[in-house]
Picture (tube, rainbow, N blue to C red):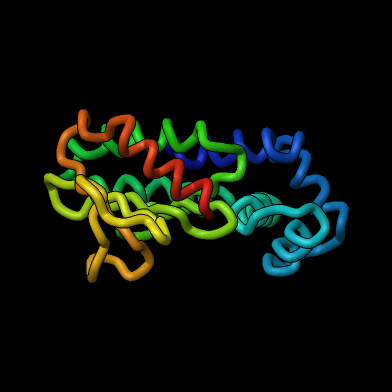
Length: 183
């Protein structure tokens, strides 16, 4: 299980006061069987975010192993041949994990989406030598390393390019936290 999935499972219990196994029992006692119904139930009846509802639904339906393996594989695939960037990703994910219990981590094929009520950032190993951080920071003027995203990614307003672990510093964490707080 990758760090992102472990963090999500740990955050589920921190946010709700119940571990994953207890939420699976709640779902099973509800009598619901379809994935979409379970997600809707958890979101409406228990105020879950979509990511947590999806996690519990997969676990309750017995499809979690495939989903967690797929999640792990997506992150591993992103860094295949770019292993030098993985330590930057891990460092940033450790910091993001400190922001709040409501951070959702959603790996995609080419990047990892970080969400709260909406996406606030993405972490993307864009080349073998560069990790791009996409941020949603409305009404913030580009400055220094914080540049306008331009055509790089239409889902983000800003981008920070990182090539060395030391560049993932307090300033970068500050921008990530600002995006998190504004989402």
